Length: 203
Image (cartoon, rainbow, N blue to C red):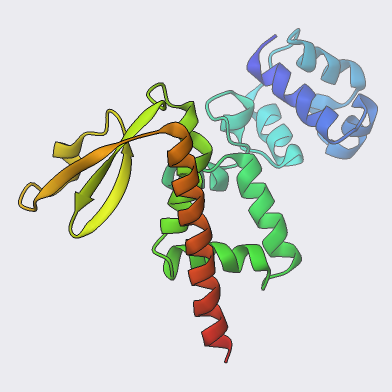
């Protein structure tokens, strides 16, 4: 079966609709009977442009998605993915929460973690979640730079990421378990610091 066939079948199943239901609702003469739709879903019949456009409209997806040119169901999500790297599932999750309640705690927390905390706590959460997936995750090193100490995995390209005009020192190496504890402490400290900032704003 073609990508088009696979996707129109899966879209119909996702909606929990039968072929007769789709045919009666879509109101398009090229898909006038369940047999015709069945042939499209099995790849026994090649759709023309008009059919593709109508099916994309019915399923609320882009024609690029139906034809396999994009893995995003609509152009808006594709644009967000290109700019932010979010999946359709992540976009839908955030949209549903925001649509349900504009002033929700998750959206506020995400904005505040980025704006008030400069994204440091989010970065530490990501570091904690994905560090162990790295091939070189069994060790890391501590780097003193600009008066602060930071932890980096082995293989980190210092020359490309650190300003060469500023002195830096490799303080020492730490194992994975110690890194996890340090990162968890940094996450908790970041959240506590943000909480205090928000608490002061409310006063």
